[in-house]
Length: 83
Image (cartoon, rainbow, N blue to C red; front, side, top):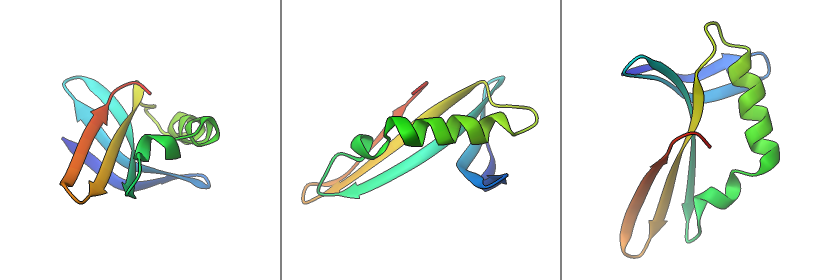
């Protein structure tokens, strides 16, 4: 269940805040055309997302990544838990 979109916490923002079963999850969404969106989720970006998620009350149990790759063959969407 989606609880929020573009959730602000301090200076940061969580793209999606969802509840999966009993777990609160912060989700970062990365989209790229012609490349691997996972490469945009750098260690620095992960640190910022973790820091922002930690400001939420209650704080999420984990951070997931949704990687959306747009190419000639169509769209490939991957949900990567616990990044």
